[in-house]
Image (cartoon, one colour):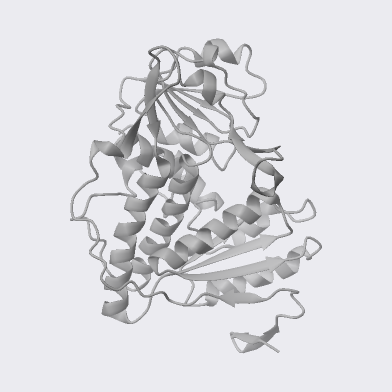
Length: 363
């Protein structure tokens, strides 16, 4: 029986009803990495089937790959320097189609860049105290530098208690109340930024989209995406739209930048958008499609077929914000490991940055 010791106490993982799977370090022989910032070609021209309509389809997979290439190089450097690699643990309670897919994508991404992957899958009936006990074990494990609690969680578990249990130094998803609080207060920088909002800013940065003096609309006000994104865009004039907003289409039509994160399929139609707007579609919904693998396909909050004739740039679903979000999880995990080993962050390679919020937030 697998036993893990923390502070002299043996914890029986059979009691926790889970198997903690420790990932193996991957070797990346012959990797050269990036030495210069990515070219504007990250934005892939997308011409449409009729008329003269055209916009840029933002290739999130290409953005994420460039980021992962740099991370892989830095992981090798860390391994050579201290004999260890960063470690990311994902805690998931119960099964949810989107969560299962997201967790799997994180594990594959860890393998790709050489980050050790730690996964704990617990039944939906797992008591809250056992989830908290698992988080505490991961907090104490020096092989783990990032802990990510996969959402949603079963209703009998108080999410706030679980998020507060994660060590601030390992909260790579940036959802600990103290990290979110530091994001709100000017002059107090959080240890980590929530990964999806950070990914949105990274996409805007690479797309050379001007934030200052623009009008941005964020659709959705969740603690995970909507509110942190609005906070990070404070150099623009920001409007947050939610379920109680009267006439959301009218409010959205004034925006130069639109970020939608509601999970409501095709909520945002073409007539909602200002001509030339930049649209980041964060929401994902699974719809039945017998012709697709698994019998379903993913679509976004934005009706792409309409928005492409109005927007100047847009992220598709899938292949847009999602892959960059995963890359930001890896980036935050790497930064956590560097801090743990007392190694200064190398800023000479600016092909990606996790400090975008310092540039874009109001001074």
